[in-house]
Length: 272
Length: 334
Image 1 (cartoon, chains in turn yellow, blue):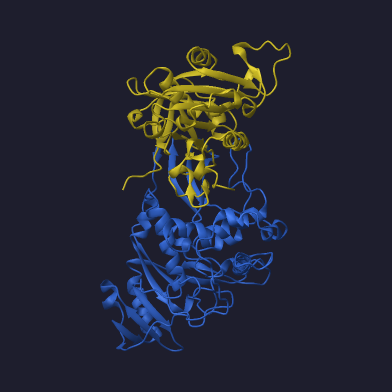
Image 2: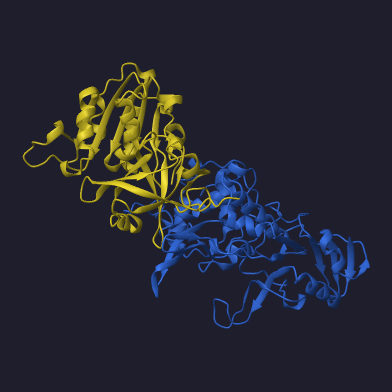
Protein backbone atom coordinates (compact mmCIF):
# COMPACT_ATOMS: atom_id res chain seq x y z
CA UNK A 1 0.00 0.00 0.00
CA UNK A 2 1.40 3.43 -0.87
CA UNK A 3 1.50 6.16 1.71
CA UNK A 4 -1.06 8.78 0.66
CA UNK A 5 0.56 11.36 2.96
CA UNK A 6 4.04 11.12 1.43
CA UNK A 7 4.87 14.40 -0.34
CA UNK A 8 7.48 14.77 -3.10
CA UNK A 9 9.97 17.62 -3.60
CA UNK A 10 9.53 19.87 -6.67
CA UNK A 11 11.73 22.75 -7.81
CA UNK A 12 10.45 26.32 -7.60
CA UNK A 13 10.86 27.83 -11.09
CA UNK A 14 9.69 31.38 -10.47
CA UNK A 15 8.30 33.67 -7.79
CA UNK A 16 6.33 36.78 -8.83
CA UNK A 17 5.49 39.27 -6.11
CA UNK A 18 2.06 40.62 -7.04
CA UNK A 19 1.31 42.43 -3.79
CA UNK A 20 3.17 42.52 -0.48
CA UNK A 21 1.27 39.52 0.84
CA UNK A 22 0.30 37.71 -2.38
CA UNK A 23 2.97 36.00 -4.42
CA UNK A 24 2.80 33.65 -7.37
CA UNK A 25 4.90 30.49 -7.07
CA UNK A 26 5.60 28.57 -10.27
CA UNK A 27 6.70 25.03 -9.45
CA UNK A 28 7.80 22.02 -11.50
CA UNK A 29 5.23 19.22 -11.41
CA UNK A 30 5.19 15.71 -12.88
CA UNK A 31 1.44 15.13 -12.80
CA UNK A 32 0.18 18.24 -14.62
CA UNK A 33 -1.76 16.06 -17.06
CA UNK A 34 -3.95 14.97 -14.12
CA UNK A 35 -4.81 18.54 -13.11
CA UNK A 36 -8.31 19.97 -13.57
CA UNK A 37 -9.29 23.66 -13.19
CA UNK A 38 -10.01 24.48 -9.56
CA UNK A 39 -8.23 21.53 -7.94
CA UNK A 40 -5.82 21.94 -5.05
CA UNK A 41 -2.48 20.64 -3.80
CA UNK A 42 -1.28 19.94 -0.26
CA UNK A 43 1.88 22.00 0.11
CA UNK A 44 4.06 20.45 2.76
CA UNK A 45 6.80 22.19 4.70
CA UNK A 46 8.76 19.76 6.86
CA UNK A 47 8.72 20.73 10.55
CA UNK A 48 6.04 23.38 9.90
CA UNK A 49 2.99 21.71 8.43
CA UNK A 50 0.77 21.36 5.40
CA UNK A 51 -1.79 23.64 3.74
CA UNK A 52 -4.28 23.10 0.90
CA UNK A 53 -3.59 25.62 -1.87
CA UNK A 54 -5.53 26.01 -5.15
CA UNK A 55 -3.74 25.54 -8.42
CA UNK A 56 -4.12 28.91 -10.12
CA UNK A 57 -2.47 28.02 -13.44
CA UNK A 58 -0.80 25.01 -15.03
CA UNK A 59 0.99 24.10 -18.23
CA UNK A 60 1.05 20.49 -19.38
CA UNK A 61 3.71 20.96 -22.09
CA UNK A 62 6.12 22.82 -19.86
CA UNK A 63 5.36 20.71 -16.81
CA UNK A 64 4.59 23.30 -14.16
CA UNK A 65 1.81 24.45 -11.89
CA UNK A 66 1.37 27.81 -10.24
CA UNK A 67 -0.03 28.89 -6.87
CA UNK A 68 -1.33 32.25 -5.71
CA UNK A 69 -0.27 32.28 -2.09
CA UNK A 70 -1.33 34.81 0.50
CA UNK A 71 0.92 35.11 3.52
CA UNK A 72 -1.55 34.47 6.33
CA UNK A 73 -0.48 31.42 8.30
CA UNK A 74 2.27 29.20 9.63
CA UNK A 75 2.93 27.36 6.37
CA UNK A 76 2.60 30.35 4.04
CA UNK A 77 4.91 32.46 6.24
CA UNK A 78 7.69 29.93 5.64
CA UNK A 79 6.82 29.67 1.93
CA UNK A 80 7.62 33.37 1.60
CA UNK A 81 11.16 32.61 2.76
CA UNK A 82 11.75 30.20 -0.13
CA UNK A 83 13.66 31.22 -3.25
CA UNK A 84 13.72 30.23 -6.89
CA UNK A 85 15.61 26.92 -7.16
CA UNK A 86 14.51 25.72 -3.72
CA UNK A 87 12.43 22.59 -3.37
CA UNK A 88 8.81 22.69 -2.36
CA UNK A 89 7.19 19.48 -1.06
CA UNK A 90 3.74 18.70 -2.45
CA UNK A 91 1.13 15.98 -2.74
CA UNK A 92 -1.99 15.95 -4.90
CA UNK A 93 -3.80 17.13 -6.97
CA UNK A 94 -6.92 16.74 -4.84
CA UNK A 95 -10.60 17.59 -5.14
CA UNK A 96 -12.92 17.58 -8.13
CA UNK A 97 -12.33 20.93 -9.84
CA UNK A 98 -14.75 22.66 -12.23
CA UNK A 99 -16.79 20.41 -14.56
CA UNK A 100 -15.88 22.39 -17.67
CA UNK A 101 -16.37 19.79 -20.38
CA UNK A 102 -19.47 18.35 -18.72
CA UNK A 103 -21.26 21.61 -17.90
CA UNK A 104 -19.67 24.84 -19.21
CA UNK A 105 -18.61 23.92 -22.73
CA UNK A 106 -20.23 26.21 -25.35
CA UNK A 107 -22.33 27.88 -22.62
CA UNK A 108 -22.52 31.50 -21.49
CA UNK A 109 -20.01 31.28 -18.65
CA UNK A 110 -20.13 33.98 -15.97
CA UNK A 111 -17.29 34.05 -13.44
CA UNK A 112 -17.77 36.06 -10.24
CA UNK A 113 -14.61 36.11 -8.14
CA UNK A 114 -13.67 37.99 -5.00
CA UNK A 115 -10.11 38.77 -3.90
CA UNK A 116 -7.90 35.71 -3.76
CA UNK A 117 -10.92 33.80 -5.08
CA UNK A 118 -9.49 34.84 -8.46
CA UNK A 119 -6.81 32.19 -7.84
CA UNK A 120 -8.90 29.02 -8.30
CA UNK A 121 -10.73 30.32 -11.42
CA UNK A 122 -7.74 31.84 -13.22
CA UNK A 123 -6.61 28.72 -15.11
CA UNK A 124 -10.13 28.18 -16.47
CA UNK A 125 -10.58 31.83 -17.41
CA UNK A 126 -7.24 31.82 -19.23
CA UNK A 127 -8.07 28.58 -21.03
CA UNK A 128 -11.29 30.16 -22.32
CA UNK A 129 -9.54 33.43 -23.11
CA UNK A 130 -6.86 31.66 -25.14
CA UNK A 131 -9.43 29.54 -26.95
CA UNK A 132 -8.20 26.25 -25.48
CA UNK A 133 -11.74 25.77 -24.16
CA UNK A 134 -14.77 27.01 -26.02
CA UNK A 135 -17.74 28.88 -24.59
CA UNK A 136 -20.49 30.88 -26.23
CA UNK A 137 -19.20 33.86 -24.28
CA UNK A 138 -17.57 34.59 -20.96
CA UNK A 139 -18.32 37.49 -18.60
CA UNK A 140 -16.21 38.34 -15.58
CA UNK A 141 -17.11 40.18 -12.39
CA UNK A 142 -14.04 40.58 -10.19
CA UNK A 143 -14.22 42.21 -6.78
CA UNK A 144 -11.34 43.48 -4.64
CA UNK A 145 -11.04 45.32 -1.36
CA UNK A 146 -9.26 48.33 -2.89
CA UNK A 147 -7.15 49.34 -5.84
CA UNK A 148 -3.94 48.08 -4.20
CA UNK A 149 -5.41 44.61 -3.82
CA UNK A 150 -6.19 44.02 -7.49
CA UNK A 151 -4.57 40.79 -8.66
CA UNK A 152 -3.45 39.69 -12.13
CA UNK A 153 -3.59 43.24 -13.57
CA UNK A 154 -1.88 42.30 -16.85
CA UNK A 155 -4.22 39.42 -17.45
CA UNK A 156 -7.27 41.50 -16.47
CA UNK A 157 -6.29 44.00 -19.17
CA UNK A 158 -6.06 41.20 -21.72
CA UNK A 159 -9.35 39.63 -20.60
CA UNK A 160 -10.99 43.07 -20.81
CA UNK A 161 -10.36 43.25 -24.54
CA UNK A 162 -12.29 40.11 -25.38
CA UNK A 163 -14.83 39.68 -22.62
CA UNK A 164 -17.55 41.62 -20.85
CA UNK A 165 -15.94 42.56 -17.57
CA UNK A 166 -16.58 44.48 -14.36
CA UNK A 167 -13.72 45.08 -11.94
CA UNK A 168 -14.99 46.54 -8.72
CA UNK A 169 -13.46 47.63 -5.43
CA UNK A 170 -15.18 48.16 -2.09
CA UNK A 171 -13.85 51.71 -1.90
CA UNK A 172 -12.51 53.72 -4.85
CA UNK A 173 -9.12 55.35 -4.43
CA UNK A 174 -9.26 58.92 -3.19
CA UNK A 175 -8.87 60.73 -6.49
CA UNK A 176 -11.42 58.41 -8.11
CA UNK A 177 -8.93 57.68 -10.90
CA UNK A 178 -8.27 53.96 -10.65
CA UNK A 179 -6.79 52.14 -13.61
CA UNK A 180 -8.53 49.36 -15.53
CA UNK A 181 -11.88 51.16 -15.44
CA UNK A 182 -12.39 50.06 -11.88
CA UNK A 183 -15.82 50.68 -10.40
CA UNK A 184 -17.03 50.93 -6.85
CA UNK A 185 -19.21 48.56 -4.84
CA UNK A 186 -19.66 44.90 -3.96
CA UNK A 187 -19.86 42.35 -6.77
CA UNK A 188 -23.56 41.84 -5.99
CA UNK A 189 -24.22 45.47 -6.97
CA UNK A 190 -22.87 44.90 -10.47
CA UNK A 191 -24.55 41.64 -11.43
CA UNK A 192 -27.47 43.42 -13.11
CA UNK A 193 -25.07 44.73 -15.75
CA UNK A 194 -24.70 41.24 -17.17
CA UNK A 195 -26.79 39.87 -19.99
CA UNK A 196 -29.10 37.10 -18.78
CA UNK A 197 -31.40 37.07 -21.83
CA UNK A 198 -30.63 33.48 -22.77
CA UNK A 199 -31.04 32.23 -19.21
CA UNK A 200 -31.01 28.50 -19.92
CA UNK A 201 -27.55 28.79 -21.45
CA UNK A 202 -26.01 30.57 -18.43
CA UNK A 203 -23.58 28.90 -15.99
CA UNK A 204 -22.26 31.03 -13.15
CA UNK A 205 -19.11 30.23 -11.16
CA UNK A 206 -18.67 32.05 -7.83
CA UNK A 207 -15.43 31.93 -5.87
CA UNK A 208 -14.54 34.13 -2.93
CA UNK A 209 -15.02 34.63 0.80
CA UNK A 210 -18.00 32.69 2.26
CA UNK A 211 -20.20 35.78 2.72
CA UNK A 212 -19.52 37.02 -0.80
CA UNK A 213 -20.41 33.62 -2.28
CA UNK A 214 -23.55 33.35 -0.19
CA UNK A 215 -24.97 36.75 -1.13
CA UNK A 216 -23.91 36.51 -4.76
CA UNK A 217 -25.75 33.21 -5.10
CA UNK A 218 -28.85 34.61 -3.37
CA UNK A 219 -28.79 37.65 -5.66
CA UNK A 220 -28.42 35.49 -8.77
CA UNK A 221 -31.34 33.30 -7.69
CA UNK A 222 -33.45 36.44 -7.27
CA UNK A 223 -32.50 37.42 -10.81
CA UNK A 224 -33.85 34.11 -12.02
CA UNK A 225 -30.70 32.00 -12.45
CA UNK A 226 -31.70 28.39 -11.65
CA UNK A 227 -29.72 26.93 -8.75
CA UNK A 228 -28.42 24.05 -10.93
CA UNK A 229 -26.59 26.66 -13.03
CA UNK A 230 -24.67 28.21 -10.13
CA UNK A 231 -21.34 26.79 -8.92
CA UNK A 232 -19.33 27.50 -5.80
CA UNK A 233 -15.81 26.63 -4.70
CA UNK A 234 -15.54 26.06 -0.95
CA UNK A 235 -12.59 26.79 1.28
CA UNK A 236 -12.20 24.76 4.46
CA UNK A 237 -9.59 23.89 7.01
CA UNK A 238 -7.98 20.60 6.05
CA UNK A 239 -5.33 18.49 7.66
CA UNK A 240 -5.20 15.45 5.37
CA UNK A 241 -7.06 16.27 2.10
CA UNK A 242 -7.90 12.56 1.74
CA UNK A 243 -11.10 12.12 3.77
CA UNK A 244 -9.55 11.05 7.07
CA UNK A 245 -9.00 14.04 9.36
CA UNK A 246 -12.62 15.24 9.39
CA UNK A 247 -11.92 18.97 9.53
CA UNK A 248 -13.54 19.84 6.19
CA UNK A 249 -16.66 17.71 6.65
CA UNK A 250 -20.00 19.52 6.34
CA UNK A 251 -23.08 17.33 6.82
CA UNK A 252 -22.17 14.03 5.11
CA UNK A 253 -19.93 15.76 2.58
CA UNK A 254 -16.15 15.87 2.66
CA UNK A 255 -15.06 19.08 0.90
CA UNK A 256 -11.66 17.50 0.10
CA UNK A 257 -13.25 14.48 -1.61
CA UNK A 258 -16.50 15.73 -3.15
CA UNK A 259 -15.49 19.41 -3.45
CA UNK A 260 -14.12 21.97 -3.37
CA UNK A 261 -16.45 22.77 -6.29
CA UNK A 262 -20.15 22.24 -5.61
CA UNK A 263 -23.25 22.90 -7.58
CA UNK A 264 -25.31 25.43 -5.64
CA UNK A 265 -28.17 22.96 -5.34
CA UNK A 266 -25.89 20.84 -3.12
CA UNK A 267 -23.75 23.72 -1.87
CA UNK A 268 -26.65 25.65 -0.35
CA UNK A 269 -27.43 22.64 1.84
CA UNK A 270 -23.90 22.47 3.22
CA UNK A 271 -24.70 24.53 6.28
CA UNK A 272 -22.39 25.06 9.23
CA UNK B 1 -14.72 -24.53 19.76
CA UNK B 2 -16.41 -23.67 23.05
CA UNK B 3 -14.70 -24.62 26.32
CA UNK B 4 -14.92 -23.82 30.02
CA UNK B 5 -11.61 -23.42 31.79
CA UNK B 6 -10.19 -22.22 35.08
CA UNK B 7 -8.76 -18.71 35.34
CA UNK B 8 -5.29 -20.22 35.86
CA UNK B 9 -5.57 -22.12 32.61
CA UNK B 10 -6.86 -19.02 30.86
CA UNK B 11 -3.83 -17.08 32.07
CA UNK B 12 -1.56 -19.89 30.84
CA UNK B 13 -3.16 -19.50 27.41
CA UNK B 14 -2.65 -15.73 27.52
CA UNK B 15 1.03 -16.26 28.24
CA UNK B 16 1.36 -18.33 25.08
CA UNK B 17 -0.52 -15.72 23.05
CA UNK B 18 1.72 -13.00 24.44
CA UNK B 19 4.58 -14.34 22.33
CA UNK B 20 2.67 -13.34 19.19
CA UNK B 21 0.47 -10.52 20.41
CA UNK B 22 0.57 -7.51 22.66
CA UNK B 23 -2.48 -8.05 24.85
CA UNK B 24 -4.61 -4.96 25.45
CA UNK B 25 -7.47 -4.69 27.92
CA UNK B 26 -9.06 -2.10 30.21
CA UNK B 27 -6.72 -1.67 33.17
CA UNK B 28 -6.95 0.17 36.46
CA UNK B 29 -4.63 3.11 37.09
CA UNK B 30 -5.06 3.96 40.78
CA UNK B 31 -5.40 7.66 41.64
CA UNK B 32 -5.00 8.75 38.02
CA UNK B 33 -8.66 9.71 37.65
CA UNK B 34 -9.74 13.25 36.85
CA UNK B 35 -10.90 14.05 40.39
CA UNK B 36 -8.76 13.63 43.48
CA UNK B 37 -8.77 10.13 44.94
CA UNK B 38 -10.36 8.60 41.86
CA UNK B 39 -9.02 5.89 39.61
CA UNK B 40 -8.70 5.78 35.86
CA UNK B 41 -9.59 2.81 33.73
CA UNK B 42 -8.12 2.85 30.25
CA UNK B 43 -6.65 0.48 27.72
CA UNK B 44 -3.12 -0.76 28.31
CA UNK B 45 -1.11 -3.95 27.92
CA UNK B 46 -1.86 -6.68 30.45
CA UNK B 47 -0.45 -10.12 31.34
CA UNK B 48 -3.35 -11.76 33.11
CA UNK B 49 -7.10 -11.82 33.54
CA UNK B 50 -6.72 -10.33 37.03
CA UNK B 51 -5.30 -7.13 35.56
CA UNK B 52 -8.30 -6.62 33.32
CA UNK B 53 -11.19 -4.52 34.63
CA UNK B 54 -14.63 -5.49 33.42
CA UNK B 55 -16.90 -4.67 36.33
CA UNK B 56 -16.65 -0.98 35.41
CA UNK B 57 -16.68 0.77 32.05
CA UNK B 58 -13.32 1.98 30.76
CA UNK B 59 -13.22 5.76 30.51
CA UNK B 60 -11.32 5.63 27.25
CA UNK B 61 -12.11 3.27 24.40
CA UNK B 62 -9.85 0.73 22.67
CA UNK B 63 -9.49 3.14 19.72
CA UNK B 64 -6.17 4.27 21.16
CA UNK B 65 -4.69 0.89 20.24
CA UNK B 66 -5.56 1.33 16.56
CA UNK B 67 -5.01 5.09 16.35
CA UNK B 68 -2.75 6.34 19.16
CA UNK B 69 -3.64 9.83 20.39
CA UNK B 70 -0.30 10.98 19.06
CA UNK B 71 1.20 9.07 16.16
CA UNK B 72 4.38 9.85 14.25
CA UNK B 73 3.78 9.80 10.49
CA UNK B 74 7.18 10.97 9.29
CA UNK B 75 10.61 11.74 10.65
CA UNK B 76 12.35 14.62 8.90
CA UNK B 77 16.06 14.79 8.43
CA UNK B 78 17.07 17.69 6.22
CA UNK B 79 15.17 16.87 3.02
CA UNK B 80 14.09 13.33 3.76
CA UNK B 81 10.66 12.15 4.87
CA UNK B 82 11.11 8.80 6.63
CA UNK B 83 8.22 6.64 7.75
CA UNK B 84 8.53 5.11 11.23
CA UNK B 85 9.20 1.39 11.60
CA UNK B 86 6.15 -0.82 11.71
CA UNK B 87 5.42 -2.75 14.91
CA UNK B 88 5.93 -6.41 14.08
CA UNK B 89 3.84 -7.88 16.86
CA UNK B 90 0.10 -8.08 16.48
CA UNK B 91 -2.41 -6.97 19.08
CA UNK B 92 -5.11 -8.92 20.87
CA UNK B 93 -7.73 -6.51 22.18
CA UNK B 94 -10.25 -7.43 24.88
CA UNK B 95 -13.37 -5.38 24.33
CA UNK B 96 -17.16 -5.32 24.53
CA UNK B 97 -19.58 -5.77 21.63
CA UNK B 98 -20.23 -2.01 21.28
CA UNK B 99 -16.50 -1.31 20.97
CA UNK B 100 -16.11 -4.11 18.44
CA UNK B 101 -18.79 -2.33 16.39
CA UNK B 102 -16.88 0.94 16.71
CA UNK B 103 -13.90 -0.65 14.91
CA UNK B 104 -16.15 -1.03 11.86
CA UNK B 105 -16.54 2.79 11.86
CA UNK B 106 -12.78 3.25 11.98
CA UNK B 107 -12.34 0.76 9.13
CA UNK B 108 -14.89 2.73 7.10
CA UNK B 109 -13.01 6.01 7.44
CA UNK B 110 -9.40 4.83 7.49
CA UNK B 111 -9.47 1.90 5.07
CA UNK B 112 -12.18 3.13 2.70
CA UNK B 113 -13.79 6.59 2.18
CA UNK B 114 -11.92 6.88 -1.16
CA UNK B 115 -8.37 6.54 0.20
CA UNK B 116 -6.73 3.91 2.39
CA UNK B 117 -4.50 4.89 5.30
CA UNK B 118 -1.28 2.89 5.58
CA UNK B 119 -0.65 3.58 9.27
CA UNK B 120 -4.05 2.29 10.30
CA UNK B 121 -3.88 -0.60 7.87
CA UNK B 122 -0.49 -1.78 9.20
CA UNK B 123 -1.93 -2.11 12.69
CA UNK B 124 -5.39 -3.25 11.76
CA UNK B 125 -4.29 -6.28 9.73
CA UNK B 126 -2.49 -7.70 12.78
CA UNK B 127 -5.29 -7.16 15.30
CA UNK B 128 -7.35 -9.94 16.86
CA UNK B 129 -10.43 -9.30 18.97
CA UNK B 130 -11.53 -10.95 22.20
CA UNK B 131 -15.13 -9.95 22.85
CA UNK B 132 -16.45 -10.23 26.40
CA UNK B 133 -20.06 -10.66 27.42
CA UNK B 134 -21.48 -7.60 29.16
CA UNK B 135 -24.44 -8.99 30.99
CA UNK B 136 -26.51 -6.03 32.03
CA UNK B 137 -24.32 -3.19 30.88
CA UNK B 138 -24.18 0.13 32.73
CA UNK B 139 -26.52 3.01 33.52
CA UNK B 140 -25.47 5.25 30.62
CA UNK B 141 -25.40 2.49 27.97
CA UNK B 142 -27.82 2.43 25.05
CA UNK B 143 -26.16 -0.14 22.77
CA UNK B 144 -29.43 -2.02 22.14
CA UNK B 145 -30.98 1.11 20.60
CA UNK B 146 -27.90 1.50 18.38
CA UNK B 147 -27.92 -2.16 17.35
CA UNK B 148 -24.41 -2.70 18.64
CA UNK B 149 -25.10 -4.91 21.68
CA UNK B 150 -24.19 -8.15 19.90
CA UNK B 151 -21.46 -9.25 17.52
CA UNK B 152 -20.08 -12.43 16.05
CA UNK B 153 -17.00 -10.70 14.67
CA UNK B 154 -14.42 -11.92 17.14
CA UNK B 155 -11.52 -14.34 17.38
CA UNK B 156 -12.16 -15.11 21.04
CA UNK B 157 -15.51 -14.72 22.76
CA UNK B 158 -15.73 -15.02 26.51
CA UNK B 159 -17.93 -14.90 29.59
CA UNK B 160 -16.00 -14.28 32.78
CA UNK B 161 -17.62 -16.18 35.64
CA UNK B 162 -16.79 -16.13 39.33
CA UNK B 163 -14.24 -18.93 39.20
CA UNK B 164 -14.13 -19.95 35.55
CA UNK B 165 -14.01 -18.59 32.01
CA UNK B 166 -16.30 -19.66 29.21
CA UNK B 167 -14.29 -19.31 26.04
CA UNK B 168 -15.38 -19.49 22.42
CA UNK B 169 -12.28 -19.88 20.24
CA UNK B 170 -12.98 -18.97 16.63
CA UNK B 171 -9.42 -18.32 15.52
CA UNK B 172 -7.77 -21.62 14.52
CA UNK B 173 -4.32 -20.33 15.43
CA UNK B 174 -5.41 -19.88 19.04
CA UNK B 175 -7.02 -23.31 19.44
CA UNK B 176 -4.01 -25.08 20.90
CA UNK B 177 -3.31 -22.43 23.51
CA UNK B 178 -6.18 -23.05 25.93
CA UNK B 179 -6.90 -26.16 28.03
CA UNK B 180 -10.48 -26.72 29.19
CA UNK B 181 -13.61 -28.82 29.11
CA UNK B 182 -15.86 -28.71 26.09
CA UNK B 183 -19.04 -26.87 26.98
CA UNK B 184 -22.04 -25.12 25.54
CA UNK B 185 -22.94 -21.49 26.21
CA UNK B 186 -23.79 -18.24 24.48
CA UNK B 187 -21.82 -15.04 24.92
CA UNK B 188 -23.63 -13.02 27.51
CA UNK B 189 -24.54 -9.95 25.42
CA UNK B 190 -26.69 -7.21 26.90
CA UNK B 191 -30.25 -7.45 25.62
CA UNK B 192 -31.77 -4.37 27.20
CA UNK B 193 -30.64 -1.01 28.55
CA UNK B 194 -32.20 1.44 30.94
CA UNK B 195 -31.91 4.09 28.22
CA UNK B 196 -33.98 3.45 25.11
CA UNK B 197 -33.76 5.73 22.07
CA UNK B 198 -35.95 5.75 18.98
CA UNK B 199 -33.91 7.72 16.48
CA UNK B 200 -35.92 8.88 13.46
CA UNK B 201 -34.55 7.90 10.06
CA UNK B 202 -33.11 10.48 7.67
CA UNK B 203 -32.88 13.55 9.88
CA UNK B 204 -32.10 16.44 7.51
CA UNK B 205 -29.64 19.14 8.57
CA UNK B 206 -31.96 21.82 7.25
CA UNK B 207 -34.74 20.68 9.62
CA UNK B 208 -32.64 20.84 12.77
CA UNK B 209 -30.12 23.63 12.21
CA UNK B 210 -32.31 26.42 13.58
CA UNK B 211 -33.81 24.55 16.53
CA UNK B 212 -33.83 26.37 19.85
CA UNK B 213 -32.58 23.30 21.71
CA UNK B 214 -28.97 23.78 20.57
CA UNK B 215 -28.76 27.14 22.34
CA UNK B 216 -28.77 25.44 25.73
CA UNK B 217 -25.38 23.99 24.86
CA UNK B 218 -23.97 27.45 24.00
CA UNK B 219 -23.80 27.98 27.73
CA UNK B 220 -23.48 24.50 29.17
CA UNK B 221 -20.82 23.05 26.89
CA UNK B 222 -17.34 24.33 27.75
CA UNK B 223 -15.84 22.97 24.52
CA UNK B 224 -13.29 20.78 26.28
CA UNK B 225 -13.64 17.95 23.74
CA UNK B 226 -13.62 15.14 26.29
CA UNK B 227 -16.72 13.59 24.69
CA UNK B 228 -14.80 13.28 21.41
CA UNK B 229 -11.66 11.89 22.98
CA UNK B 230 -13.43 9.14 24.90
CA UNK B 231 -15.75 8.34 21.97
CA UNK B 232 -14.88 4.99 20.38
CA UNK B 233 -16.13 6.25 17.00
CA UNK B 234 -14.64 9.75 16.79
CA UNK B 235 -11.95 9.42 14.13
CA UNK B 236 -10.80 13.02 13.58
CA UNK B 237 -7.15 14.01 13.80
CA UNK B 238 -4.95 17.03 13.19
CA UNK B 239 -1.47 16.94 11.75
CA UNK B 240 1.17 18.57 13.85
CA UNK B 241 4.77 19.23 12.88
CA UNK B 242 7.47 19.59 15.47
CA UNK B 243 11.21 20.12 15.34
CA UNK B 244 13.69 19.05 17.95
CA UNK B 245 14.99 22.01 19.92
CA UNK B 246 18.48 20.47 20.00
CA UNK B 247 18.64 20.39 16.19
CA UNK B 248 16.10 22.39 14.23
CA UNK B 249 16.95 20.57 11.00
CA UNK B 250 15.28 17.44 12.27
CA UNK B 251 11.77 16.85 13.46
CA UNK B 252 8.64 14.90 12.86
CA UNK B 253 5.09 15.10 11.58
CA UNK B 254 2.52 13.64 13.95
CA UNK B 255 -1.18 13.29 13.91
CA UNK B 256 -3.04 13.82 17.13
CA UNK B 257 -6.67 13.29 18.06
CA UNK B 258 -8.86 16.26 17.21
CA UNK B 259 -12.22 17.37 18.55
CA UNK B 260 -15.02 19.19 16.71
CA UNK B 261 -15.99 20.75 20.06
CA UNK B 262 -12.61 22.38 20.68
CA UNK B 263 -11.77 25.87 19.37
CA UNK B 264 -9.80 25.90 16.14
CA UNK B 265 -11.23 22.72 14.63
CA UNK B 266 -12.56 24.61 11.60
CA UNK B 267 -10.54 27.81 11.80
CA UNK B 268 -8.62 28.57 8.61
CA UNK B 269 -5.42 30.53 8.17
CA UNK B 270 -6.47 34.18 8.19
CA UNK B 271 -8.95 33.61 11.00
CA UNK B 272 -12.19 32.69 9.23
CA UNK B 273 -14.04 30.14 11.34
CA UNK B 274 -17.20 28.05 11.19
CA UNK B 275 -19.45 26.85 14.05
CA UNK B 276 -18.06 29.23 16.68
CA UNK B 277 -20.98 28.65 19.08
CA UNK B 278 -20.75 25.59 21.31
CA UNK B 279 -24.36 24.70 20.56
CA UNK B 280 -23.53 24.59 16.85
CA UNK B 281 -20.73 22.16 17.65
CA UNK B 282 -23.09 19.99 19.70
CA UNK B 283 -25.46 19.94 16.73
CA UNK B 284 -22.59 19.09 14.35
CA UNK B 285 -21.47 16.16 16.51
CA UNK B 286 -25.00 14.91 17.16
CA UNK B 287 -25.90 14.97 13.48
CA UNK B 288 -22.71 13.09 12.60
CA UNK B 289 -23.40 10.38 15.15
CA UNK B 290 -27.05 9.76 14.30
CA UNK B 291 -27.77 11.20 10.84
CA UNK B 292 -25.15 12.25 8.30
CA UNK B 293 -22.71 9.37 8.84
CA UNK B 294 -25.61 6.98 8.21
CA UNK B 295 -26.60 8.85 5.07
CA UNK B 296 -23.07 8.32 3.75
CA UNK B 297 -22.28 4.80 5.00
CA UNK B 298 -25.65 3.18 5.73
CA UNK B 299 -25.54 2.71 9.52
CA UNK B 300 -25.33 4.93 12.58
CA UNK B 301 -21.94 6.06 13.80
CA UNK B 302 -22.85 6.12 17.52
CA UNK B 303 -22.63 2.70 19.15
CA UNK B 304 -24.36 3.73 22.39
CA UNK B 305 -21.45 3.13 24.76
CA UNK B 306 -22.38 6.21 26.81
CA UNK B 307 -18.78 7.22 27.55
CA UNK B 308 -19.49 10.83 26.48
CA UNK B 309 -22.15 11.07 29.19
CA UNK B 310 -19.84 9.58 31.79
CA UNK B 311 -17.00 11.99 31.08
CA UNK B 312 -18.69 15.36 30.47
CA UNK B 313 -17.62 17.84 33.18
CA UNK B 314 -20.88 19.74 32.62
CA UNK B 315 -23.05 16.63 32.91
CA UNK B 316 -24.36 16.98 29.37
CA UNK B 317 -26.01 13.75 28.30
CA UNK B 318 -25.77 12.82 24.64
CA UNK B 319 -28.57 10.28 24.88
CA UNK B 320 -30.73 12.95 26.49
CA UNK B 321 -29.91 15.32 23.64
CA UNK B 322 -30.85 12.70 21.05
CA UNK B 323 -34.05 11.96 22.95
CA UNK B 324 -34.92 15.65 23.04
CA UNK B 325 -34.21 15.99 19.32
CA UNK B 326 -36.39 12.96 18.59
CA UNK B 327 -39.29 14.48 20.50
CA UNK B 328 -38.93 17.84 18.77
CA UNK B 329 -38.91 16.17 15.37
CA UNK B 330 -41.98 14.20 16.35
CA UNK B 331 -43.79 17.46 16.96
CA UNK B 332 -43.41 18.09 20.67
CA UNK B 333 -42.80 21.69 21.68
CA UNK B 334 -39.23 22.62 22.41
